[in-house]
Image 1 (cartoon, rainbow, N blue to C red):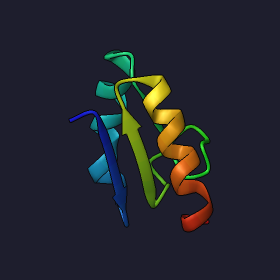
Image 2: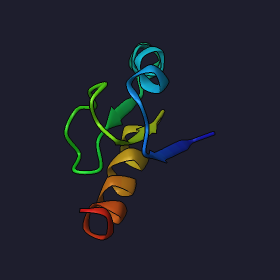
Image 3: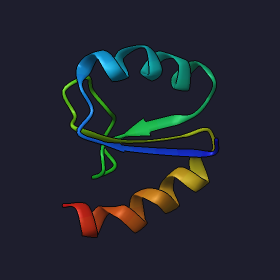
Length: 64
């Protein structure tokens, strides 16, 4: 999976994934492009920072 997007996520769904994505060199943010926290309700995760930036740009306006 190159890109993962999830809405209505809970802290227990994201906590371990945040570490795994970070350690693998990927990026995980909220839909505004800010670093993800366990309190975000929607996240975008991607192993490729360029693809991640494209996905954030594509989803930012429709979701905010």
